[in-house]
Image: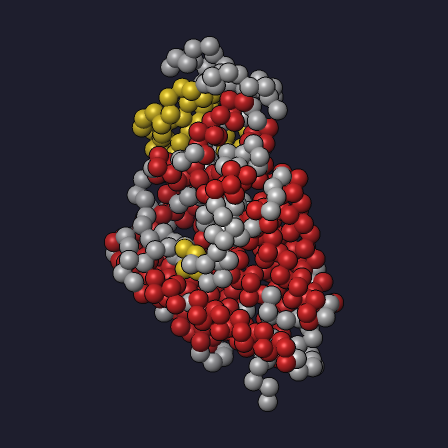
Amino acid sequence: MDWFTVPDYWMSRLVFQRALAAVYLVAFLTAALQFRALLGERGMLPIPRFVARVPFRRAPSLFHLRYSDPLFAGVAWGGCAVSAALLAGLDSWLPLWGGMLLWLVPWALYLSIVNVGQTWYGFGWESLLLETGFLAVFLGNDEVAPPVLVLFLLRWILFRVEFGAGLIKIRGDACWRKLTCLHYHHETQPMPGPLSWFFHRLPGPLHKVEVAANHVTQLLVPFLLFTPQPVATAGAAVMILTQLWLVLSGNFAWLNWITIVLALSAVRFPAHPPSVAPAPLWYEVVVSAVTALVVVLSYHPVLNMVSRRQVMNRSFDPLHLVNTYGAFGSISRIRYEVVVEGTLDDRPREDADWREYEFRGKPGDPRRWPRQFAPYHLRLDWLMWFVALSPAYAGAWFGALVERLLEGDRATLKLLRRSPFPPGRPPRYIRARLFRYRYTTWRELRATGACWERTYVRDFLPPTRLEEPARTR
């Protein structure tokens, strides 16, 4: 009997690969549509400035060789094309080595983007996509049955994602231990979805059931992944259902979706496996070597996971091969939002005609209901949530954002839902104010139609203007 492959998982591999290709497609599309304002030559955190001070060995990327906005666009749109080809099943039409090389392309391209993405790409799901995408290279195609070692490693990622997230909660905010975190989280999460208001208004006891169920899913169910079937499939199904619940309750980019993709690799679908040739010796050697590498690189992530000083979402190697994960170790009780306003008036007095910029996903107008964007990732909106938590998160990019708005930069304005100023006529002054937001009650919603109620807290940025008016690009 062939120890190396498990034919019964051929459908699991097929579903996993097509779903992963779809996530890749969303990731590259996000990069293609947003990079000019965020990372371009005239972006808020320009890549050329980054690669000039950070050596290749610390952040391997194609852009260390050369950078230009057209080149980045080519990489991002090329990644979209390759992802679409994988989604359509092109790898199945290639020889085994050709399919592996095709899967290597989106991983290398996305690694090049993440490693120069700076703050905009500092999210755990970036490393999670890269780690998963790297293992997908060695999962094979229709020429061979799925290798058991790679399937095991995919479960190992899923275990660290769920168990790491469970540990960071239990060790972190006391509300997770008291089962009360969801009294606040649906309201204070980074980017609410269209159903988040309703989730927040669920009865308190049901919120406690949600938290308790989450603890079971993240601290106990992951161990079922390493048990015989059909128990492993049942454990993966519980994780999938939990992730779908999170999809409905908020916008977490592709974090939930990539977790679902990983769980699908552990599900054994009732399908008769096709006849395939035995795996070639060179393939067994390569897969075994990759497995040994992952085992060695798992040392630091495991050490972090069992440590009392556990940190969330950290890469321990520049290729993001084995990482540590976790989310929401602490929960905000109050939601704050930074509201950005501009005026055309010559003097920025309090009674000037201040007009508010509208972002695509983050709360702004109290009457505007949140929309569903995930798995698409609104990077600027997410960073604005962090800035509202503390000005320390603003860094250099927030000042650059204000400057671009004062210039009327078209690439930056495309990141927003709406600019209150006509094209070619940017404001003379920009200011930012901090507001406290809370969900309205059922009675307030019926009376006003507003899902949010907001209260002014303080000025975040005083009225600011350009030293010399810039020409609109």
